[in-house]
Image (cartoon, rainbow over all chains, first blue to last red; front, side, top):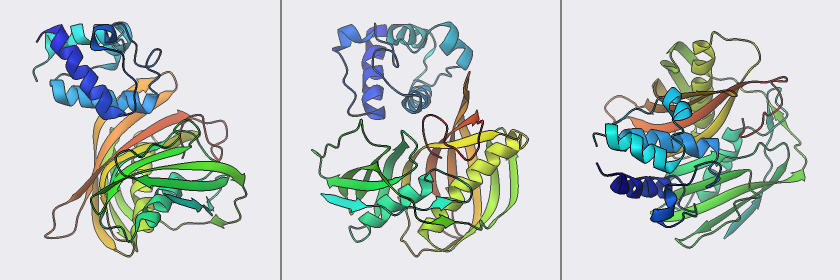
Length: 86
Length: 222
C-alpha cells in the first residue's frame, strides 16, 4: 500500500471518529500529531486505534505506538504501508 | 431544539453524576420520536452538579462542544440528533442506592460474562455499565483504590423505556491500551433473549488509581 493512499484513509478514519475534527489538507496531514496538533482526547485516540486496526487488518501494539511515535500521521502511514493487509 | 433542566441523583456514595443517569436523560428526551439508536455518547468531563441537556435534530445541528460535560450523537425514528449535557451548578437533591441483579460473573483479560435481570431501560443501562465495571475489577483482582470510569458508549439500539430483560451478557475485549495513567479498554457487549438476535454495543472504560474513589478523576465520568 502506498503511504499517500494510507494517509487518505487515515484522514477518512479521523473524520469517522470525530466528524467535527478540523483537518488540514492531506498534503499537510502527515506532519500532524493526533493529540498535540489535532487535539484529539484519549477517548478519541483509542477509538481511532480500534478502527485503524480493524480497517487495515494490522495490530498497533502499545509499545510500537510509543516507541515509533505512531500518533504522528506520517509515522503511522509508514508503519501501515509495511504491515497493512486491508 | 429540546432544552431540559436535569434532576440527576447521586448514586451510592459517589459525589459526582453517574454516566448512566446522563445517558438515560438523553434517551428519555427522545422517547416518542421513534426507535433510538445511540451512535455515540462520550463523557468528556465529570459533572458534580445538575444542569441542562440540549438536543438538536438535523444534519446541521451544531452544539457548543467545548463547554459540555457529555456529548451525544444518535438517531430517533431515523432522524439525527446531537446533544450535550452541561452542568450549571444546580444542586443534586437526591441520592439513590441501587440493587444490581448481576450474577454468575466470570472475567478474564477485561472480557467475561454474567447473568443480568433488569426491569426497564434505565435499569438495563445501569446493569450493562455495572457488569462491565465488575468484569474490569475482577480482571484486576479487585484491587482497592481502582477508579473505573465510563469513557464512551457506541452503536446501541436502545430498547423502549419499559422493556425488561433477563439473560446472559457477554463482554468481549476488543482493545486494551496501557498508559502511565492506567488502562483503557474497548469492549463489545452483547445480550439477547432466546430466539432473538443479540443486541450489541461498544463500551470504552478507563481504569486508574484514585485517591478518593467517591470523587471523579480527571477526564470522564463515572
